[in-house]
Image 1 (cartoon, rainbow, N blue to C red):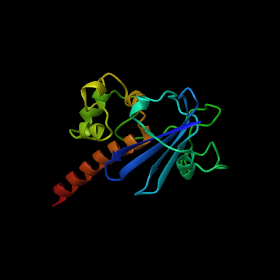
Image 2: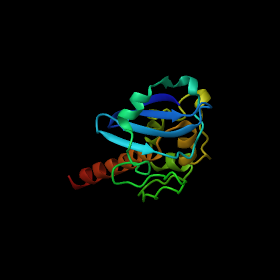
Image 3: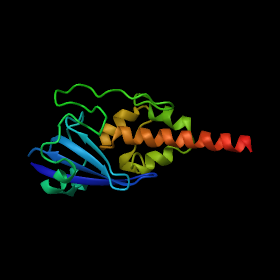
Image 4: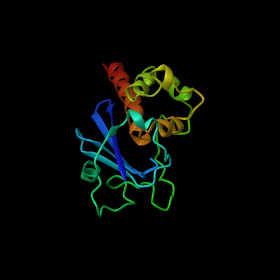
Length: 175
């Protein structure tokens, strides 16, 4: 096995670190994302995307680093505490209900919901540079899969952005 890691800032949560376990041909067997500031751990035992995007840009990791967040004996089907993740049989993940966004909406649709959505995408390193351009016709889920970004984390940040704006607007209206 070969191990790699990446890091990315998560607005409001600090940095997230993703550790990938790959076979010799660099196909992703499973990965785990850990956010130290919140102690959130998300394990994905059978990822939909099996190819690392630009593996040369990732840092090398050790099996020990991977095992810190996915210890031997941890239930392979358990994604995040209390959440259903993709099982090793390839069964789809349990769908989450989102209020403002959904994974199958296009990037263009997502950008139209709030003026700061583009900043969130940029914070996740999605579409921020010439060779990383994302098309407005691609779905949020497609973009996350192509760039190795955890879809649920991006969706939570987007949802929080709009919810905070609505809360702020309500507070302004009542004062």
